[in-house]
Amino acid sequence: MYRVMQLPPDLDARELRRALWAHRIGHRITEDAEGQTLWLADPRQREELQRLLVRWQRGEPLMPKGRTSPLSALPTSSLLTPLRLAPVTAITLGLCLVVFAAMAVFGDRVIAALAIVPLGVINGSLAVGSLVEAVLAGQVWRLLSPAFLHFGWMHLIFNMLWLWYFGRQVEALQGSGRMLLILLAAGIGANLAQYAAGTVLFGGMSGVDFALLGYVWLMSRRVPGSGFFVPQMLVVFMLGWMVFTMTDMAGAVGFGNVANEAHLGGLVVGLALGWYYSGRARRQR
Image (cartoon, rainbow, N blue to C red; front, side, top):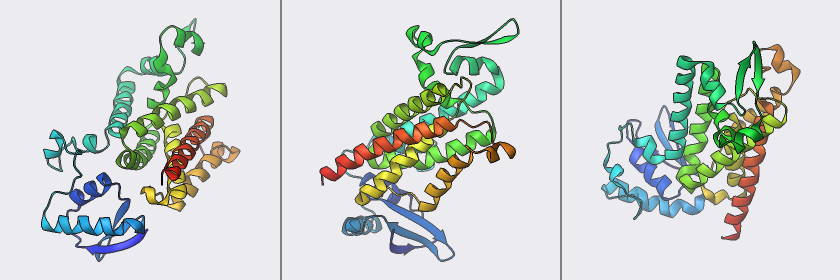
C-alpha cells in the first residue's frame, strides 16, 4: 500500500470511499492519533485518485456515469446503505441471522429442514436420508443451505466478520454477480466436501469465507492493479487456524467439532476461481 495523504480525524470520508470503490480504485483508510491516512493499492492509479480528490474537495459529483440509482439519494446513515453497496453480501449475512434466530425459536426443525440430507427420529434413533434421493425429490436447496446454519454466537460472529470483510471487497471491485458465483460455488463445494467425508450434521459459512480468502489473495498477488488487498498476516492466521483445527490439539482445547473438509473444500474452490479470473484479467491487460 502507498501513502497518499493525511485527512483530518473528524472528517467524514464515506462518500469518497464509495466513489473510490465505484471507480475500482483499491485503497484503505487507517486511523491514528494524527488523523486518517489514505493509502493506495496500485501506484498507477495515483493520477486518477488525485483527480477524484480534487472533485471531492470542490463538492462535485464523484460517482461514475451509469452507477447511480434511486437508492443513491438515501442518507449515508440509512440501514439500506450496506444493501446498496454490497447486496449479495448483506443479504447472505441477513439470512444467516434469520436462520440463527429461527433455530433459537424452532430448534431442531430448522436444522432438519436445512441439513444436507433429510433428518428425523424413528423409534428413538436418528434417521438419515439420502442426498441423491433428496435432490431428485426437488430438495435442491440442501446442497447450499447448511452454510446458513450456525451453532453458537461465536461461530456466527466469526463467520459473519470474514464474510463482510471479503464479500464487500469482491462486490465493490467486481460486482455482485461475481460474489454470487463465489457464494454458490464455494457453498456447494464446501458442503459436498464435508458430506463426502461422512458427516451429515454440519453447518456454517466458513467454507465460503475460506473461498473468499483464497480468491482475494490470488487476485491481489497475480493482478496487483486489481485493487484487491488482504494483509499477509491475516492470510497466515486463517490458514494457520485451518491447519490447527485439523490436529488433535484442537480437540483437546475444545475445538474438535470443526468442519475441516468444508474449510478445505471452500479454499480449493476459491483458489480455482481466483486463478481463473486473475489469469483472465492478466490476459486482458
